[in-house]
Image (tube, rainbow over the protein chains, first blue to last red):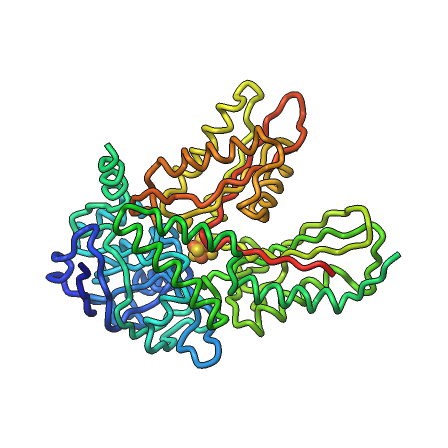
Length: 185
Length: 279
Ligand code: SF4
């Protein structure tokens, strides 16, 4: 059974999401990869305003392919999240509530998630053509010079994902595998 | 002596870049389908279903299977009786440039590993030449994503480490990679040669049809055994648990020095793309 998640993502919603849940995400989300994260964190360090409202926001770690023909956006699956590990704790402290990516996270990120209340969703890596269909609108908000890595505002509808790490720090990468292996015994 | 024009190579590389990014090889598709059917873990099965639907959409709409359309790895088997009219290397880069721009493929190459400025046309290609007898020219384009490339490793084992050392290293690389390289993965292994040759063999192994086992029965058995062992790890599709962690293990080997046992493991994701043409 899938839980529907609509952004902006409040602390209350986050508390309700548990590791292993399948979700369908709708609403406005933002895209950023390491290069954009670096700039965002530099702005924050200088005490300047970020180019989007970070409070209760969800950031999708993705560098989409260019749109082709009548596409809103090209293929758009998640990139590997650990490259954002140096920046995510800062972003979470600023109010970011959700991250969508793939792969492991550092203990520092998990600690920040538990402290401030944030959730890490996994989208399906390599399913870029499928996922791009869930994106109904896309526009560049900042850092156009970064090309695929620019900061984009997306409107998504029923983007499929699952909760990898919840706000209590429970991790599907550890439990899912163990439960599967236990089921074979 | 056979003459081949550089422009023909550009045209072929361009087409291969575009097609390889939208059309998954049939052996990979078959393996995804079979794994989808045999997967017993619910979430894993759902994920494999979407992965399957994804490559069908890519094929139908002629759009990239994955947004990471990779760095273009271009393999050439050039007959020694072939003469190229024009600049071969530039012809290959030009094909990549045209294919990535026209095909709306993502430009994912930076000009320098440290200053990291995007070249905006996905050049240069990574080119691998093999000189072979005859007057043929075989071109293969393999767009290589870096989510999986980053999870690859090389190690100089000791001869005393032997077969057990080889097996343990392959398992270690897969375990270290975990959910990061978008499992289910394809595992390319190179054993022997030198430090760099082992890595080259591992990459070449990923070009082989996964339904074709190593011609040496000993290594063919090892491929089967490693596939079984990897799938017993339970990592599962995307790392959520399940029986489908790898689609295939391909091993290539060659002679090496009396003092060494080099091994490289090149990880590829379920978007294992390559397309060839003979000119
Ligand atoms: S590892 Fe493969 S499937 Fe995953 S994002 Fe990279 S190219 Fe795509």
